[in-house]
Image 1: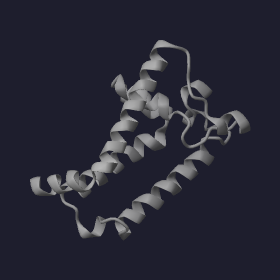
Image 2: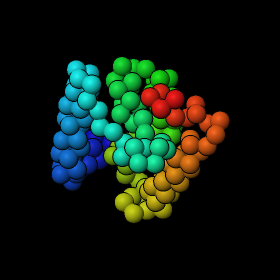
Image 3: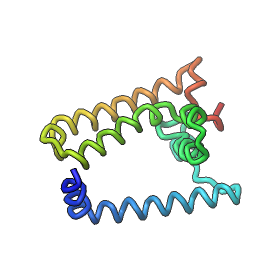
Image 4: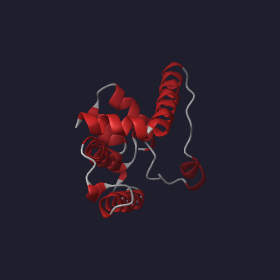
Length: 140
């Protein structure tokens, strides 16, 4: 297992560096949102008036940083349900690297396209009448 972990870090340096940069950008955005009223608006929501599947992700992350798991789930339920699945898939790939979940495998494609379908359905359902509870708190 330790050998798999070393192999992962050695072969994915570029991706880990990119992830680190995005993490630092997210941290900077969090600090800006806590100290100022500045926010990045959702262009889809501004143009159509509808909530996209990603609306509420910033609030989701901020609530997670405050350890408010229930509040995070209220901001974006689809991401709250998919995140543990993505984390488990990442850990399986890093720690065990099974053939059934290798890059481009059926397992990976199933997770990818299953997530896309769930997010698209969520994007439609959250905008239906009487489904306002699926909208992020700032749109309710």
